[in-house]
Structure formats: structure tokens, C-alpha cells
Length: 402
Image 1 (cartoon, rainbow, N blue to C red):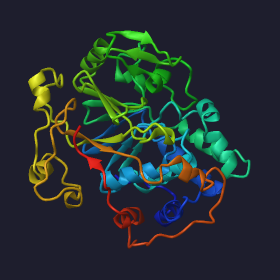
Image 2: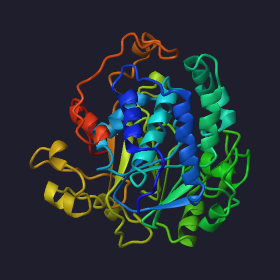
Image 3: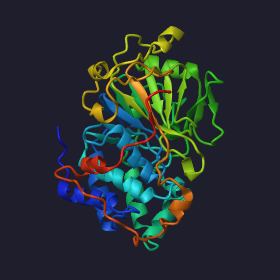
């Protein structure tokens, strides 16, 4: 069922043009952002704390204001509406383009409500954004006014806290809580508020897995908990789940697999803070037709979990919605991946050419300077966002194996 948003599609496409056709991206006016936030808040009021999503779906981890790398994600993974995306939070702070990043995601959510799904991370918070860059960026880009920060952080209070994929996979930003054993406890939370310092809501966005422990342990972050194998085993068994997917932790290779795929961390901000040199990833889930409820328990099952597929076989397991000819040459193989469940693979990528601290600082992105803006060729003839990526050059470095 299509959700009847009040903002006309033509207006949303105009917002996309402003963000995509200029370099650096052009910020949206405060009244436009206010309208976007108000419209989305109205719709999110009726959305449960845990949204139910069906595969195929591409899962994206932390972005942290790295706008050009967000565009790379759509370039390598496919643009909506052809590809469905679940974003796991931490859209703002630290990167130089937090305003543009969250603006683009809001417009896309309104433009493609059944293709784009956003949940809340620990940085979707007034307290955190005041200290880690987003608040200051808004002041710099909007002549000292905090109105846009207020509109967007108010919206953050409405974002869901988690998602289930095919009823078998639980996704959230951070991790598990010693105060929560059932998904229904998460569903019962009053989420429409600032993230508290402790409790289930805080733990969902702050906690981390730890292979060195089996139970819960206080987190060195000062919020949330570390949780071990016994914890995730019990949580999955009690809720008829096979896996948990989360973000929240920098991964040098773009991902981390714990306990033979029972828990995955997805990190989607390459060259984090423009100096870490890490890679990033997007997790593609094609299906969840698992014969073994407990996931990958045996070494031989892990080795054979994702056999080499030719393109025809790969399409047949649930990914026909994508244009594979644009991503693989004839006869290409998807190599075995370790530590993931059947029907899953990581797109691993490096930073965009714009992800360079010296280059970015030279463009005055912390202020409003559009003297060097230029229009790229516009091939739009119906769906502006999809046509934008048809005009972009293809990636030179994409991996489909670990």
C-alpha cells in the first residue's frame, strides 16, 4: 500500500536536484527542511518501534555525514526504487556534510517510502549532536540559526528503534540489553523522546558484541553494555531469530562477523573522518531461506554457506530486481564469503574521490560557498534519482568477496 504523503513528488524531485546537481551539494532552505520533517513525523507516528521488512534488502551502517560516500553506496548497490535499503542510524556528526546527508535521506524516505527504511542510532540525539559536529555545522551553514538542527533532532525522536527482516533477522544500531529478553519489550517502549542514558532504548543504540565474554559486561563507552555469545544465543532462541545485524563500530575492512555469522557489524563510512583509511561495506540480503535455525554452527557449513554462483543462479535465489549486467561481466562469479549466512554477501568499497580532507576543506563546506557549483548532465525523464546514477561513472573498485 502506498503511503499518501502530502508533499508532491515534483517538489521532492526538486529537492533531490538541489542536493545532487551542485558541487558542493546545495543545502535546502530551513522552511523546506521544516516541511520535510513535519510530514515524516506525521507518518512515523503510526510506525511501530520495530518495523517488519522483507528481503531482498541492502543494509547500510554508519554514514556520519560523508555525503559523497553515501552516493557511492547508491552507485554500487543500486538506486531506489530498484533497490530496497535499511539504514541503521548515525547519519550525522563528524563528517563535513551532515546537513546534506540527512536531508537526502529524508527526501528519499518521503519519495520512496516503501523502499527506504531509517532507524535510530546513538547519534540521532540532541546531546550527542551538540558535541560531535552536527549542531556547529548547522550554525555555520544557516547563518548562526539553530532552527534546522531543532527540526531534524525533533524528527530523530520519531525514528524506529529496530527492524526484523523476514521475521528471522533482528537489526538495530547497537546491540542487546540485560533488561530486554523479548522483542515485545522493545515494541512497548515509548520511543518519542530523547535517548535516555540507560535502559533498553539506550542499550539498543549503544551496546557492542564482544567475543571475549559470554554474558553482559559494562561497556567502556560509558553507555550500553558489551554482550557475549550466550546472550545472543538466548535472545535469538527466545525470539525465533537466526541472526542479529548492527552497526556502531568502525571496522577496518568494512564489516565484522561474530560467532560464525550470528552477529554482523556493518560499517558504511570509508576513510572515516577523512583519515582512518578503512574500507566500508553494504550488506545485501537476498533471502533468509535457512534450513538450520541456528545459523552456521559447523565449520563445513560455514565454508559452503555461500557457494560460487553464476549470474543466472544468483538471480534465481532472490535478486532479480537488480540489473546485474551493469555490475558483473558475463561468466563472473560471486566468491565464497566467510561468516555470513546463505543468501547474504557484502559489497565492500573504498572512499569516493571527494573523500579527501584537503579537497573538502578547500571547498568551504562548513560555510555556504557555492561559487564553484556546476550542473552535471541531467538525463532525467521521469525518476530523477535513478537517472542521476545512470549518468555517474562506474566504480573502479568494488569487491563481492571477503
